Image 1 (spheres, rainbow, N blue to C red):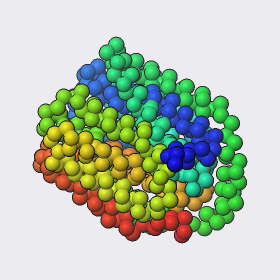
Image 2: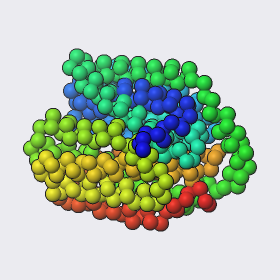
Image 3: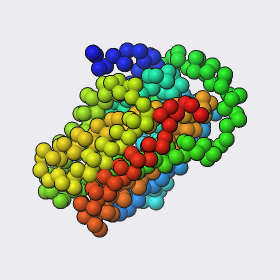
Image 4: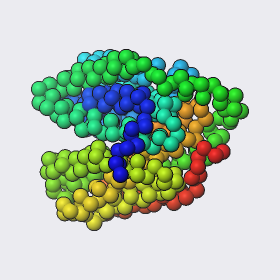
Amino acid sequence: MNPWKGLKGLPHDMWALFFTSLINRSGTMVIPFLALYLTKKIGVSPAEAGMALLVYGAAAFIAAPLTGKLSDKLGALKVMKFALFGSGIIFFLYSFITDYYWILVASFVLAAVNEAFRPANLSLITEIVAPPQRRMAFALNRLAINAGMSIGPVIGGFLTLIDYHYLFYANAVASVIAGVYFTSINWSSLAGAQKEQTEEKNISKIRFAILSDKTFLFFLFAVVPANLVFFQHLGALPLYIVDDLGYTTAAFGLFSAINTVLIIIVEVPLNNWMNDTPYRKSLIIGALLAGIGFGGFAISTTVIPLVISIIVFTFGEMIFFPITAAYTSEIAPADRRGEYMGYYQMTFSFAFSAGPWLGTVVYQNYGSVILWSGALVFGLITAALMFFVKSNPSVK
């Protein structure tokens, strides 16, 4: 059996989205190096640099549902074009700002524009891909993101040796190129999707506001603990491996590469293989593997146990994230998919902002054993909550 066969049935437009995300993410250089740029070039303290990242995350959190609603009203295509070209301009202008408080303002604006791409992108995938193919489509989308993220920061690392400002120029150029490519596409799949949306519009009008959709709100609440666990790879994990265990930063880079390489090679075939697995079962498995993987760091001090823990949580990531996106696409009304994807994206923005901070606070005050034990508990909490979600979210 060909594990990649599920990709053959995806529409041409999905592949256009794949290459758009790949081009865009291949230029991701500013955010991974922003803390270093601010401390080494601007001269702020580490705490002030962390505040800039917190502002970025907060803006992304606030903007997610708003840009999702704009996707419903104006169309996902327009929002994505605005995000690509707009962020390209802002990345370029950001490089000329030296005052710290204006940097905070620029970070907020950059996040609001740059992160508008995400909910619109997820909404567009839902529009152009039929429900049975959505798990594969979201997995393919993550493949583009992770493949690009394996390129951008590597190039960015070399650019910092020349001049940190080249990070902003390269990121801006990649965003604009992605925007030009995106604009050149003839989106053939959208005619049918828009017809479907028009047909369901009268039905969806009678639905209550998002805050009255208790099924979806419970689902969002349930994914938060696991998302907080997954984002420990940005905060506490590098500190634990380098400071506690005494490995070099180069060694940590190699450990991190295990996660990226696995995602690139395995995620699409894995989701193809699990395509018929009920949502509830997939969500439980993904959350359990997240908790077990990160919880395993509590007893992992040598290379082999560390590698095993990384592999376990990576499998959880490869299952959990495409499934949660597909679940959201199923539960959303046809003419409010952007709004629902925006609220779904809020859980990631919240985890991006709070997860690394919370993990480092626990690590600093209570130690690594408590931290990783807590990660296990959080993974188990999400797994337990997933027992109460619907296996067929499209049935209201």
